[in-house]
Image (tube, rainbow, N blue to C red; front, side, top):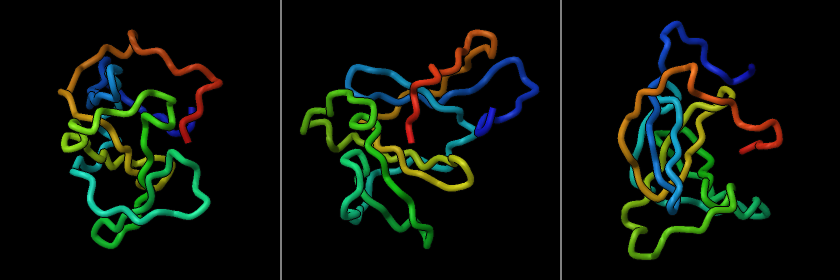
Length: 123
């Protein structure tokens, strides 16, 4: 499958994060770094889930609001200070995923992980 990392271990370590009441995870090997959202430049005519772009040490990163992209309710204004930007490698480029908060690292057995439905395309 394109974009899938090959593994020899029977498990996968996931970085977990929250979007509203939903708990999600992403392969820790795809995570470059996690940081607070810094100044983002708006991109005219971009889809509403694209927060904008940011310059991360000379690299231009597109920042995507995962909650908006998935149609989940956005976090409360009080929780905005907890929002984080997960910089991940996706199809030979880095992308920022804006999430409500970061959870723990979770180890899951490969045999218990299901692929997302074919009709779910995040980007």
